[in-house]
Every structure is written in structure tokens, then in C-alpha cells.
Image (cartoon, rainbow, N blue to C red; front, side, top):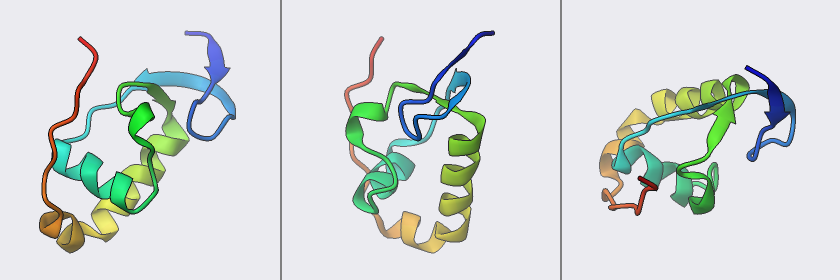
Length: 74
């Protein structure tokens, strides 16, 4: 797997597509931790870990966010 620039942090890294629930994505977008145009983009392990940690730390807030349906690439 080759190194590419992560679209979220711009660091060179190996990128992988990550899956989050629509509710988690809505929370990350509301909190400005992720932009909607990055929903179907591959991101680096560091960004994934950071987003995952944010969701874990704020799980009660995630539950309160109204889920949204996002148009995902096929």
C-alpha cells in the first residue's frame, strides 16, 4: 500500500476507507471534526484514531445528535 496525502490532515500516510454510522458522522460534522466532503474518503490511521476517540469521549452527546442520511459513493 503506497503513501498518500490524507485529505483530512494533509500528512503523508497509508490511507484506508473507514466506516462510521450516520449518527456518528452527523455528530463529527456538527462538532466540526469532519467535513461532509470527506465522508467517503479514505483517511489515515491517526485521523481515524482521533475521530474514534472523540466519539468514545462524547458518546452521550452522540446519542443526542439526530441521525442524518448521507449520500455515499457506491
